[in-house]
Length: 246
Image (cartoon, rainbow, N blue to C red):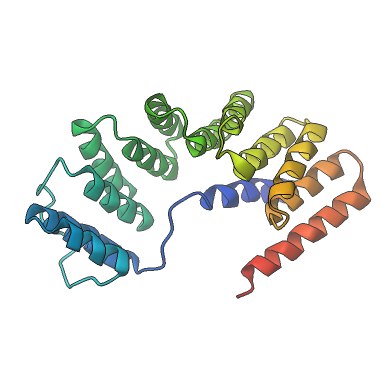
């Protein structure tokens, strides 16, 4: 039972990971690129610096260029913070967020980045506060509500999490992610019939969603529908293998 519960938890974490920014470039090169972008802006060449960053055409530059070049350059600082996040340098990334928020407290991207880093540091209450600040500024961000709901789940506040996912579903871009996390939460609350409905909504949008199949299997098993549960789990495992195949 513990193993099945862990699989259930892992599926939630995998789906959340899909919402995070990703890249294929060397992480250290990304940091160098952020520094170059900062330096380029200070000399009036920001477009060149950011182009080098996004295309991977990064010139050699030290990792630790002076960073007090343009404290008002929120975009470059946020990009720098994302690179630090991907390197696992979360305390440094938090400093970057706070630098932006000191001068521009209405920068939602900085609040979300701060929340991600606080999550990685295990500071979920503070992360929730950061997401609330972002949603106060821009309440129509469906992913923000989903991330808030996931954080509430980590804090054991499942009813409040459901409210966040339902809020995301009122927005045009709520989509399969909000349905998936709503279903996951309903499973956690023992509301397996409602969870099944949520996972079916996910699968109507994305039939290849392996974690939705697996969690549907979990719900079916809890309802005693074991043959259907086995089939749903088989479908989920097959989709997962397909997704991993080059």
